[in-house]
Length: 150
Image (cartoon, rainbow, N blue to C red; front, side, top):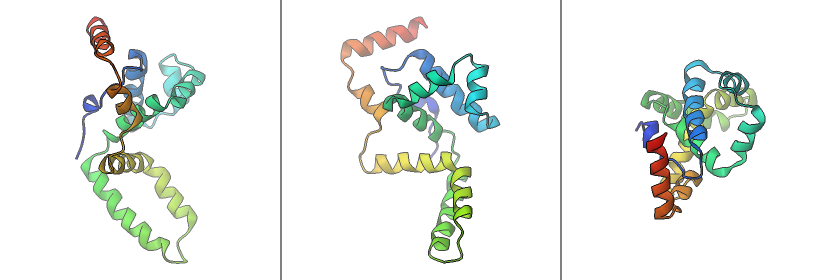
C-alpha cells in the first residue's frame, strides 16, 4: 500500500519551510542518495538547524512518515522476503552480524516504514498526527489561511 506524501497530515507546529524541506529531503535522498550536509548546503540551511529540528518529536515523526511514502510495493515485498531469510539466518550460528547490519543499513527507509505501519496497526498515533489533532479550530483556520497566502 503506497501512500502519497501529500496524504501525510501536516502538523500545525511546523513552519512551511520545515514542511517543504522535509518533503524535498525525502525525495532527494531517495532519488540521488544525497547526504544530509550536501542537501542542506544545496538548500542554504545549516546542519545545526536541521538537527535541532530533528530533536523536535513532531518534525522527526513527520520526516519519517514522509519517508514511508516513497517505499514501493515491490520494495516492501522484497523487504518481507529478505526479512524472512534474515530471521532464518538469525537462528543459525553461521549468520554474521555484518550481513545483518548491511541489510538493515541498506533498507533503513523500509524498516522505518514498517515501524510506522506497525504503530498504526497497534493504534499508536505518530507525533506529527497527534500534533495535528491537538489544534484548535482557530489554529486550523490560521494554518489554512497561511497556506493560501504562501
